[in-house]
Length: 396
Image (cartoon, rainbow, N blue to C red):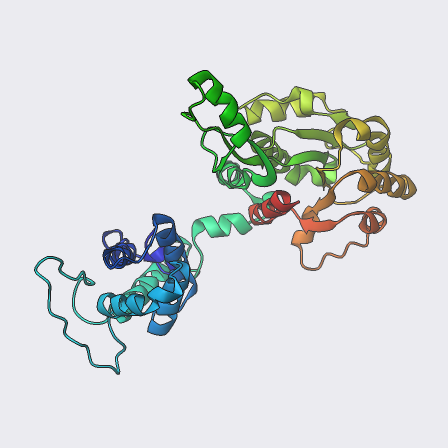
């Protein structure tokens, strides 16, 4: 982690990228040398905190470091003294010369002057250079990198090469949702909580000696998802990428069920080929009836509610419905089905690619019927919109 990672918008050259973290590590070492307790975890928190303060404001930096390093009240005076020595005084104050100890030389920022002022100046120069590089890489548009532009590009206008790059970026993003921790404790070889009961049981094999302590940790909860994807003709520009997104989710959320619907409902989960997205998509297209054809959302959702709801949906299940809501069927059937689904599921999220157009209003009959029975209506027209969905799944 370097300055460019701590200061939003800054871009540091490779040779200087660790200066701030190195100085922070030295500062923490000085504190430990005076008897102030600072752990490596505290240093990580402090590095992150520096990304949220004005690095040119010495007082903000001092308070930010004192808080993130978790300095006890009784050690504040010592902390302030070490901070003055390591980070430099304000520009209106006179620097006090401290005698160097032959046993422990004070560690200082490389070069002369106030390290915070030097860092702020250098980052401003580097940021200006980074904007110029981004402008050159993206055809003269300032503030954007090619990757940022790709994230905001609608699926329907992407080339095959761009879609392939999007799939790679999406698989990386999906891995980050990975998991969430529950309050439930389970046995763990490296857990943070000692399991007294199991430890005593183990001690019986050692003559009553507590040689091997049993441990517990908070259980990892993976999202439980059921995905219903519209494969009708109007969704054709988005279907491939949306299904790729769902298959990527399946790697981090094994309890994922996938259904396709158009004029009928098809369960896709048994046809998934592990580790081969392209082969899986080809199998879907071959076997799903009326792929890229018409759509009857209401009848398909009712079929799901009648045939699969109790089997695959529980109280911890999030339902994702990918559809533009352009329904030619019975909207009353849709309302009844969504009402049943909403009563049983934890959360119902409708992803509509048409919401990528700022002029769009959910006024189609299908969407009007669905709105009262869903928790969230979100866009699904580009990579950025799908990445924004991931935190919702993690917290749902």
